[in-house]
Length: 487
Image (cartoon, rainbow, N blue to C red; front, side, top):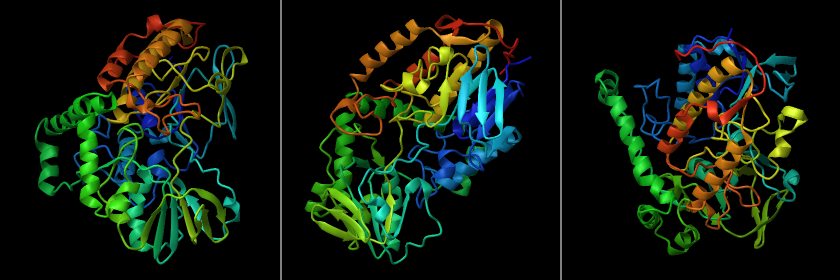
């Protein structure tokens, strides 16, 4: 009998885990999804212009290539449609409990007790796949509750509120803001974009795939695989070195500056939009419509410090900027992994307390003292140069190997000395990366520790996660007896 597995979350990670179990002939799993539908971040982020900055043929599962992509860079509805297609094709939707939020997971010495509003159920294994970008972060600005207009976070878009002819304030200028601002600039009577720190922006070489191209992807043997491999290799050999202070960093900066000069003719506005830190220290924005939107006569880029939100608008150090709508494009609580879920391991140890100085996990997957708990898209697995779907598949491969260990040895936990060695390796690698160069970003805790990003090439991560997990883990007892090796 295979171990029972609780999968928390039905986004890319949770669906990948469910599909792999299904393909291995393991049906003893349940997917818990707090929302009413699957999709994770691609369900939640439905703002105008929402899309991906990774090419579609790479931002997809390697085992489910998709010849029907309509664009080189997919928009949110198409990504959500792809996930729905995968869930239906592999028959995992029937295993998802929608509208069921897990509030607590407690290891009782042999099994995990998983608690929802419906009660508590035992599972041998828990796989957390809630992601890093699932909890919107609202800024701490005085007076937000006093605003008399309509306000919302970009990840909780108010589709009932018509922005046509409105005076709109967008607070934030990262990737989400860059995607939604062009549409807002066209609809609003006036748009204020409140910018604390400018971002590096490079053009998005987007294009549509015509009928002949899609037919070729569908029928020409190996074409999709070759195209995907080309995109992947370009990211590894050209984009990654820029983040590791390598040979391509100067080229990335030149490309961004050339893009800025080409699209923003006004030198004063260009100065506002020119960052003072190296490209890659914060996530690079990939967009070709953002800068032109900022040059429209009805758009102002406001760099004055925000003092408070007033009933009629946004007050800065230079006075009141009137608005009837405020959009908070202020990102996510990305360093608060798994919150607000309560996770308790051996000896009553709280995972939140263990991570009080910053989240950490071996391979971003396992934590000492928390047997049979595995994380997908966990600490230090985010990327600034390639597809997170690739990383998730590596993690799922590792978890499948760990399940075989569980079948033979009982509950397992990563060895503390392995975790300590892993942290030393991470620290050494992190020192080489551009993320530490004095900028604030969602990659870091308030203390400046980078807990989100992977500091190496994805080829290295694949090799590390592909190693047999046995030596890195120790057994603490026994649970279920067998896991198929034909997965």
